[in-house]
Length: 85
Image 1 (spheres, rainbow, N blue to C red):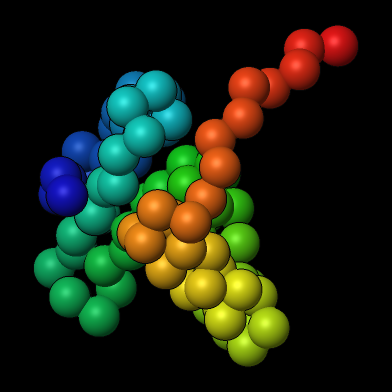
Image 2: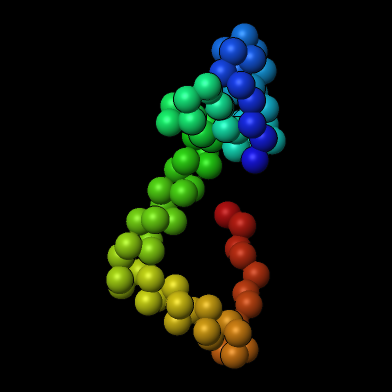
């Protein structure tokens, strides 16, 4: 994770926003007081993280995911070609 001081972040906000979005990277913005540090992520990364948390916090979905991964590991899954419409 890249870190940048607040003043540099503020001066180059547009560039940092572009970098976070284009490179799908996380940026830590640090200040003199560590309690005021923040982390900047792209909207896509935020939504992906929220979806992962939603799945992991849902017992039914979590168990379904674990069972599916087990089937794949044991070779009990089928691979199929996608049909393009």
